Length: 358
Length: 99
Image (cartoon, each protein chain N blue to C red):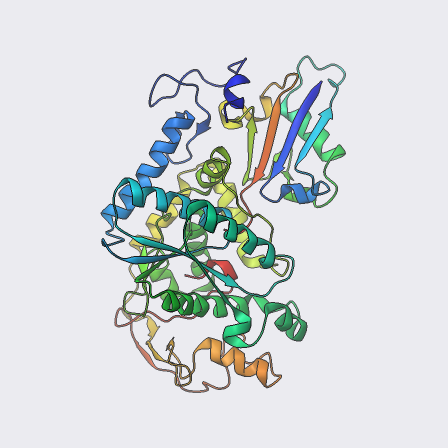
């Protein structure tokens, strides 16, 4: 930790932190372009998240809250910061870690080891739910059957439900995820590129699913990825950073790269895209899916069967293409309920990419 | 000149899965100072074993890769123009892997 100080023989950077005016700055904030020292960085980083939590009334005292924990940087920092803020500001929350074991050898088994260490380090009880237990299939088995083409669809759809089921097991009131500002900006762009108006209108909401079984919220909605990684680095937090072995999600990759290029030219672009997403007004003539429940499993669905049931049926019948692509699965056929926008626009299908379902 | 290079956030996978590399670099002919620009091209040639596009884009690091020189954000020291000196520690962290 102090190694950095000891090595500061040559102040090659600017002179002093522009907040405390005492110490050497170590970081340029993307949000404000301020040059700040490590101590002030910790303070503003944590305080901003606290303000987001307070202003948006994300939690109530006495609530049980599950942190969706993948072992990656965002959820690791979220678990650390949230337990810290919970103590410091007496939120009165009971925090839990909730992890999904997709059954991906060489990836999830390793990242789960990280979450198990976090369980000890932060003293938060951990619940792991597996695809194998919930659906009878691991992602390894699914990929063996369907190949590497639509695997991210399966994984994403299954994860969304798995998180809800895990949250139900833990009997929590809320689920928080580590989605950061960069992720949200990227999702706004993707939803525009796909013409997905239903998701565009809700992907910037800090809390979603309030009419569903378990509301979800994103305390890092305005937190830059750069700062999350810097925070994890300076605090020496233990996180896992390997790409999923099955994850060639090219379309999202392009959007991500584009956002990062924009950020380099003008870091505020990320917050501005989120702002644009928040301020969109969806035309009332836009057709939106209506929310109901799956006839088979009872999960929220805008169709007769939820997406997970359709995909699972395909797998079990050896027809893995079932439910893939725009015509939404043979099983649902012409069963399409449509209403005007704004009514109950909360369909709960997942995004194409696993870890970024909104 | 002796330097310590550290790769994290998944970048270590591009250089034999080793996170920390103690290296010796020489000042290029005709250059007065050794800069980050020199270092990046040295790293690309000597350490990166696969997928260099995950590490670099053009003559600099790929957007989304953070660089720290002696634990200080290189955006504060002039990025590619940052002068590197004996025993400096340079850290590269990718932010691009899952959350």
